[in-house]
Image 1 (cartoon, rainbow, N blue to C red):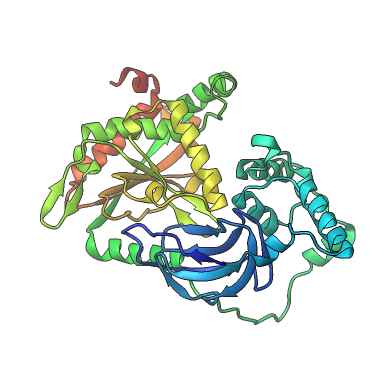
Image 2 (image 1 turned 180 degrees about the vertical axis):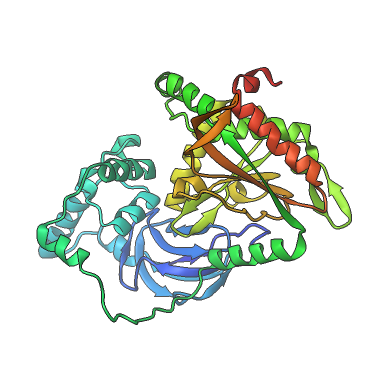
Length: 402
């Protein structure tokens, strides 16, 4: 009896997807829970796994084709899998036993972990599994990659010489289709610029106090909470307080109505191999700094693994983006519709500034707030940034909420 493999049921906000990769071909054996295909939507990538073990009989959709929710995309045959369990001739039996012995020695892998290992060309034997019965999880692969990348790599002299030699006269071109996510990002950026009255205001922050506080308590924080103390949690807490004071910045426009949200869901822009994604920090006003850092770390890891769900990147009332991690000194971020504002963080750079009529060297950061002028006036936007500046230049105010 054939086993039907169907595309997943997409949420209402997703109409269809593109089957970007077949991981198996006709005649290949498939284990239970093994990933057969990747379907990319304009928001996330769905992994289609087999619910039963079997052999691929037919692939009904070509790679690169558009598929609908619940569409039949492949069929598996269980006959060969069952035959392997039945008594057969001595030679065939010995072959089956050998295959079974080899598979028994293979480490247990989650579908996402197996995909990452294949993409990165890793040796699974070098990765320690933290799951049940030593099962290798996505987090184990990410941890292995981080530890491997942290070690210095020295190229052979011959390879260094080849790399250092510049390419001369290379005028080749490569044309690749735009991914659905990239196309959706472009669509939303154009939508924001054409439908909102975007204006950007700037300010700068002396990061001395935040950096001193972070340096003083960083080790204790990490030891107690199991996560690094970064700058983002300070900015999220400061933004939450500023949004309380200026609710227009946390609002949105729906037709002719202005919608004021009684909650604070902050989108944190993070990079991924597929492009920029903005997972949502739900109820950010109820989270402490450790919870904020834990959520952001989790978002970053799963963005790299492509395992964020649609619900996690949908919605939000305000966004924060940090171009400083890439070295950006100043920028004008674009709104994430239907939100009315986005805060841009930038590189911390030592500069000469005047403090108490004296020129001193301080670690400074430029801030940018892009906002929809239809709902946020310039006065509120400027005061919003000033509030964040005051909170971060005297971080004790975050604790006292003053």
